[in-house]
Image (spheres, rainbow, N blue to C red):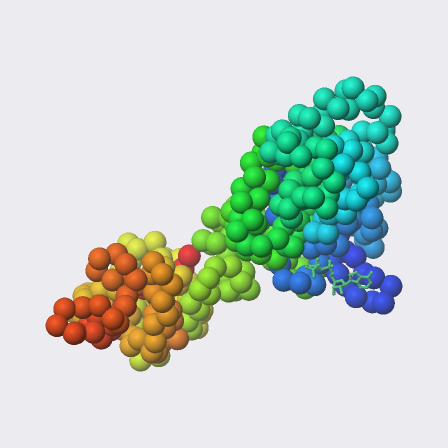
Length: 367
Ligand code: ATP
């Protein structure tokens, strides 16, 4: 439908705020790109520049390969959906959805047919004659989506469209929006600060911090191989364990990562050993996801870290074990359920028994 390219785009506001700092980013044809980052990182400013609502201070914005810096918003074949989707309160749902078609002079009959198609695709075909005040929040958001897609845009720009909804509805609409957009094959830039939204909806995620693009990749890439420490710490809950270590290569046979009073030994044929070997003699930060740490029995050889559980936090199907070595592990008990301190035969506390087993942990490096 439409491709978007930002080339070295910077936006400095008149008060000197650098909202976007030398960002280059490509959005492919039909791609669902999510811009993710904390409040104030410049996501909305990128979106507004693509829409033509804000001019870049320097750099180029290309739509379908053509320089679009001076192209007025109405000539960009763009539809926008915002967080505070303003519907016209005096119009029915059908009139709201059909409004962009009416503005561009489409006759009543084809307009009605198109509105009916769009409404049925969004599951709101039965409320076409209601007013917005008679709808639920989710239905209102679907009407806003309907109004955005009715003119078959080449590009969707969505700025936190779900953030005013409760969490159950958000999860439901998340799947619906990404399904619908993929069905339509329309390229999309979707702005959010919610990483669950980003990782579940995106083809690719672009992560921003203080105006600077930190990383771009598929959800698996940015989660598994984050480009910067910031991205490593930002994505994922619980936060990735980041432990400082010194690297020693031992005669090309194994690599030791010295973490204070203990070390992780990685055999030379382990891909992780070679990934860190060229840092020999240096201090590095080792990233380990909590879910990559597996409890093992005391005495287990290999890349094993030892830590005592300071406390356990229960999360229904699993528990988080906070260890005294500054790391967190996700643990389940031997039946596959959460670790609890209330069960157990003969009044023995499972927590205590598990705590004993947890004295040793395997640590996978990287990721
Ligand atoms: P949020 O999620 O809170 O909307 P964001 O990541 O979308 O944040 P932007 O709205 O793009 O961030 O703002 C980026 C930076 O630019 C912020 O520091 C903001 O205060 C600043 N900013 C935005 N608009 C203007 C403006 N018109 N004049 C001056 N500074 C601005």
